[in-house]
Image (cartoon, rainbow, N blue to C red; front, side, top):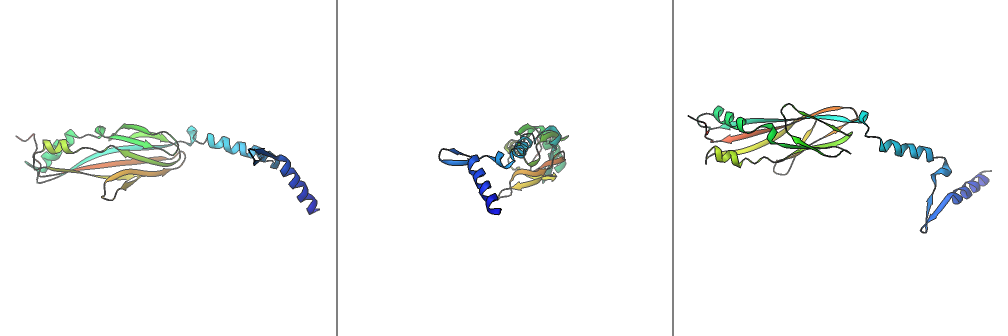
Length: 193
């Protein structure tokens, strides 16, 4: 009986195989799996429906730190923060399946919809040379970047910020804050009396 069933299964298998260019391609219909396969494919195509989408609230914050500033460190930071705003930074979010989204940074946050899975938040590098020129020839201006919230900062070998990454599940709401601290040493405020 077992041999007979094996023989029938083998004949059935061979008869349902289709030869394509010398290779055999087996039809899954012979095993009653065509409906399951079609449903799985349909689900994967529709997996990024609106109900499955997740959101990330991306916030951009700028801080200042000054040492040896003239006339004071407070005057230097007031000048820096009056001239460097969150909106001067271009942010890009890339989700698991969705297209990337670019926007200007905001201290209030920008809500972006992404598909569930991995996401990456990057920003354009900010050129501090203009600030150095405005703060005097002795000024040394640098920027330290860190992240806060549901994302993790990724840095290169010399500790320069590269991107923030995270993983979000369907219908979750994440927050990702990118914080830039502009450090000024020996600056002289152009607005000093």
